[in-house]
Length: 506
Image 1 (cartoon, one colour):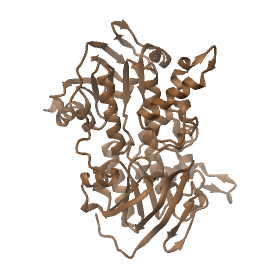
Image 2: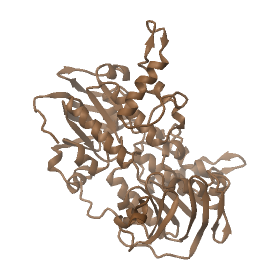
Image 3: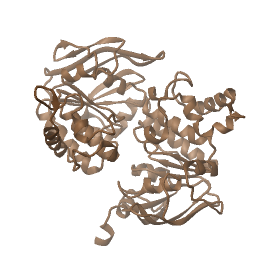
Image 4: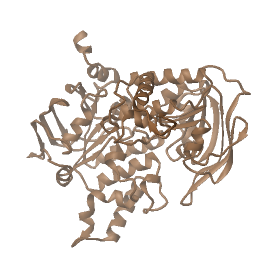
């Protein structure tokens, strides 16, 4: 990356602090961003990164500390105040109005009007929206409703919205979590264009290869405290991990494998038109079976059918030899199938409810008598999983939406485990989770397998697939292209079977 002028300070933060329910999210942190700099902010979930960004964006007030914007003291009173002063944020949890169009969302709060502001100029709104969508490489109609878009498309709309604000400080919180490689490459082009115009970018990501590729400077927070700032070019993966977690992670994945039992789950010729076709595999007790493939391969669609969210057109599924193609999630849970979805906010949690309520949500019948919930039983069950999964919360009554992304994911996993499933489907279980929390979840997955559970693990991270799984099922454009043993499943071989057309050309 290019050299930064040391005297060209754009944003400076001194002694910033913020607490929630007695827990310090930020404890006197400092930070400096220069014009034309990509400054990565790293740390485990709960380190304070998202809180830091929300304060700068005017979404939360600080308890203490100073913010200087181009040498002038500044504390945004609200999001509009921050935007007016050139500070724009792309949040990790996407915020949009589902019923409005793409164009209407892009210009929400800054509507394109006519006749002295008396009416919204829809044609001009759509025209300008088309230009911004083209800039991020998104080929959707500006008139499309947001609710019809995929997660990746929604992410790109949020990026277009942020850069349309012409901000001098642009903050990105996990902007590539749902993007394909081509979309990430386009985003990096946009970042470089903005850099050349003097825009300062604060970039949060758990993907270390991204950080080392795009960042000029890296600052690390740990447990709400400032740890260090270094030029990105002086860092490597091991050093970053050590700074983030305060220790070396010599081996991220648990060693060894679990002794497999008998086949307990059999899928044969399963097909859902337009999503996947003729998928067949078996799953043994104590086995971790990976499902790999590129975006659009049909992995999540397969999981949704197995959990009863969608219905198959043909094929059979058996659990312990008995037919099981659930007609609903309730049936799946009752029969012993658990599912941790890739989108915890949409399908995994009710974020406005407490930690306790979310953990016990799928198992309330086990803690109720004659229609009344036995609060003691419910409390004991939730407490046991908070301890087991090391969920960081002030109390069981804390709202789930106030937890870090990693702790929210642990709550989603706890909810599934409390129902005591025989089969667990984990769809991107570590998406948006820091390296330390990933290691904890990997240990948990291996422990669950050792207890005899069958686990289907869907992941876009090939090191996760090769490091955890006993076998790997590969999908490409909805077709099953390989079922590999652990010894066969190198990252290169998985990609060979995952990329459409490669096998035909080779």
